[in-house]
Length: 422
Image (cartoon, rainbow, N blue to C red; front, side, top):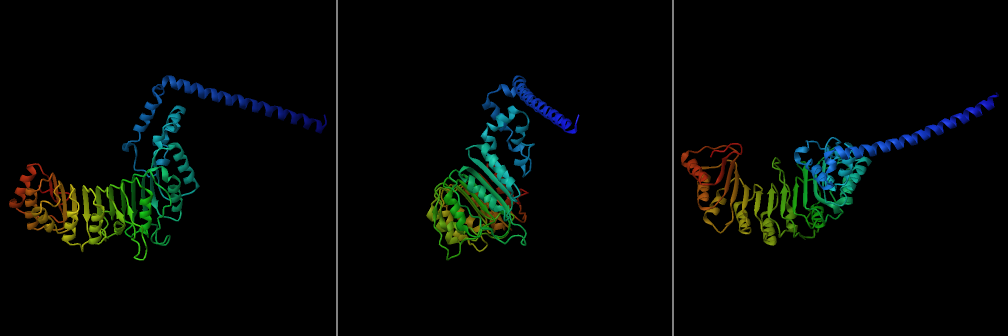
């Protein structure tokens, strides 16, 4: 047989074998499909979960999203060992149930804001699984030039967000300039909770007008916290005032472990007639501006926590009290509480609804304790906290009356936070 004829015969044989292999592959794929279907049917017979209605299966999966199920892992949403991702790899049944339960995907947390194309794909897939239900979004990490990708995420899914938490830090100075224009150009019609916290001692958002614009874009917002981070506009910058009729809880200023002061000057552009809880800590707002805010808003305030600047005097604080008669809870860190205590004693019409009082001072004097005893005698308080940075011990003539008041039903703590002298 010639070489040409032999090559032709071998080529034909190779083609026959290739066709036979492909046929066997088709048969194998069919067997695999049949195996999966048979396994699914077997699972439906022996798996107790499969015999439950889809609604109950979904509720069982939802129970796995309790806080105890979440380790301290900021990469949790990428962890296939944790719910809800873990459900996708157990069986086809569990995967189907997980993907048919949008509530499982209603919270997205992304860490280390050094984004890539994977970030966009991951978030898009997660939001697709959440379908159209409101979503809670949390972003952790340091501000980097790539943070713009995260802002694009907010713009893309802003209308679907129910809660937004940003916990951001600044990169080293040689990598990024100080300050960051955190601008948002999106609508947040469903947003109820906003929490922005910066890991820095310096104001981070250069222009607070952006923050006011954010509030304007979130008309349903109920709770807002902004800590460690923004400048007020310059005097020559025109800012359009905002009346926000939904906001009930507002926290502005620095975190408790920060000693510098931070601007809460945006309050001069805000009117908040529904405000029930206000926390202002280590801010540099002038006293007349906060008084004007209370006059303008006339809020039904129930809880106030105030750590005013060191140059604030007692009278502005008392003037604020006169404007919020609905107040039930007051926490005041002012260093020298005597004048406040005397007003509470001699002016029963000021803060007449007050039931919970917390005072923080550095070094309480004997006259402060005497004023405390009088206040507790004339005010119907349910709880009283008198924290001091330096423990000062007085005799039974001081502590005895306080202990008697505690026995009569006042939930009381006197002394450093870690040591109750009562």
